[in-house]
Image 1 (tube, rainbow, N blue to C red):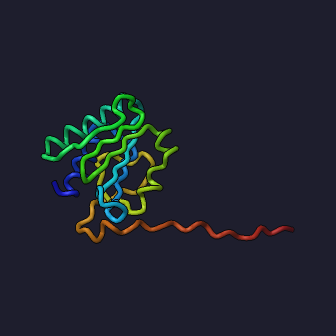
Image 2 (image 1 turned 30 degrees about the horizontal axis):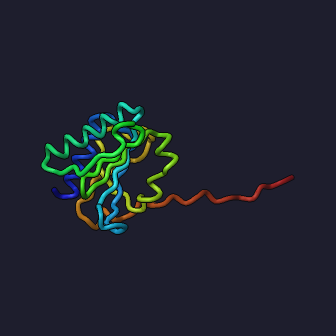
Image 3 (image 1 turned 90 degrees about the vertical axis):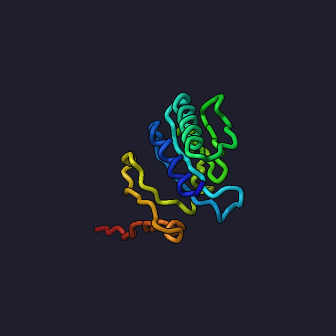
Length: 151
């Protein structure tokens, strides 16, 4: 299955079960083992398990392979290995602690999400070609500091 189709199937499956803060990263320049890392949050053990189940079912229905699943017994952090894409589904506290975005996140992939961003971020659109996909978003510069005037 094409990597763009695979990531779309995974993101749609995550959105179907109301995953929060879905991020997709291009990792092809970091490792030859997989091309995408997808990180999402679930609010409870039950939801993270349901998200992983939704991803597995959707990938299989669309002709993809699910290599393995880890952490499904506890549900705090579930990893679904879909071959070219690895899906990490974490509860918010674990996601903040492990900060996977710092490890894998230097090349975010722009995707159009069907659900509004709860954190007020700009809507992203899916790129038309591979070159646009590798562009990093603009970095916001910090505000200029002005000296305090004393009377």
